[in-house]
Image 1: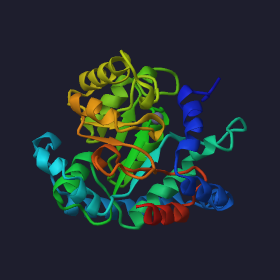
Image 2 (image 1 turned 90 degrees about the vertical axis):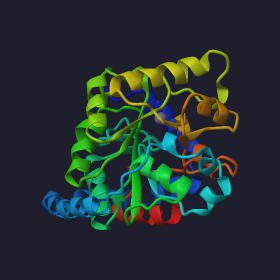
Image 3 (image 1 turned 180 degrees about the horizontal axis):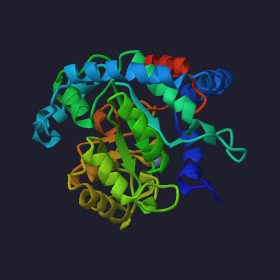
Image 4 (image 1 turned 45 degrees about the vertical axis):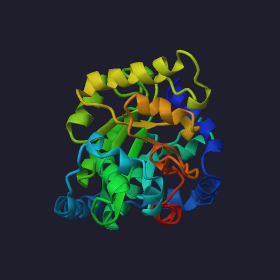
Length: 307
Ligand SMILES: [Zn+2]
């Protein structure tokens, strides 16, 4: 059945796990999202792209390799928590809704016009995308970021992230982080290994998102090998780069996962809107799900309110 993917089902289940404020705001803005998305002018989107690219280049700050940053900086939780959070958005599917999509699933499915309008709003508002390495350097050492930094992340390997999101972001000179679930690579409606490699080669960053989206809190025995070790090795073989970042399926984590992830070489891990762990904020970096119901204005308000 078209688009009735495992990730979507899992994502729908994760509604309960994500921040209730985020979910509520999304539902109240249903009608305005649809109206504003329908009124998006593609010509206007193109003209605003050039400006964002020029500003982004002017603000570009080369980020050090995260593994070169001293452990003392990475371990200073108080200093990390004291720095303002960089807004991070989490996307899943970018496609138009169908009659089969449930109310809950639509938080995870952003219609194409709505997505383009959301990204255009970011560019028009002067946001600059930052890489996870830039974010990590900022969080651990206070390294300078471009003005109005934001990070864009895409979970679960959906094909439309390559066919729709990639060219849209390219238009504005934006880069993103893609958290890949390796079981889905090459399956219908998912990205292939070659696409993941291309995203990486083009300056985006690939992160680990387990083999088949099992909840980290339930791992025991060989689960760490199946869900983390093997998929991460696969991604390193595809990209030719070390994989430094992890995203928890459903955003669910517990402190017992931190040492397991650290000993496997991860320097940071991303959750959802829940409060950060006070001892290990680098392993509970917050993101909000940019809902399919949100107009550009609702998205902007949520960015400001949530971080
Ligand atoms: Zn996921």
